[in-house]
Image 1: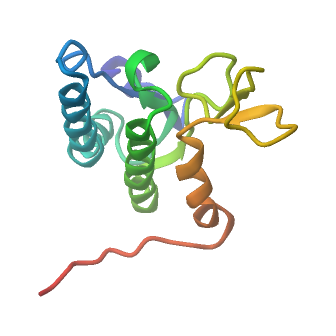
Image 2: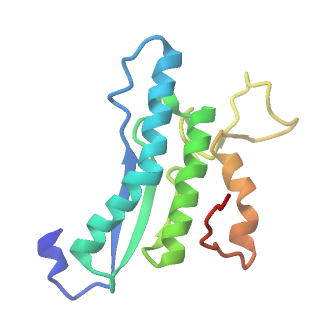
Length: 168
């Protein structure tokens, strides 16, 4: 990255952001595993993401734009298509929207929009044995679909973020 930062043939750079939860994966019972993952994901979205952005801005400077072309939890085996994954998608997306409003990130693209297996995708082809779908539906909505649906107006309209403080 440092060698590339000295070149002048590009105006943007690509970053993939995946939070690993390896440190939580073996914790038992499962409820404690998800508590660990919840803490780690929240910390990553609110503390580590700004640090990570700062790290790249430090290397590439402010004139080059950061494109986050993939972001998600690293492995879908335990956490994919869960409420935890949906909350993380919403939390990280809100923090990336803030970074976008500040000019730190130009684009951020969720990974993966559609896939054939049960994991992180927003939608996937419906399995014939799945009963929790709309009649005649071809696709099944994943848990991360809903944060995107709730934030649709932010993307569709001329909505912007305001910096605010809570005062008592």
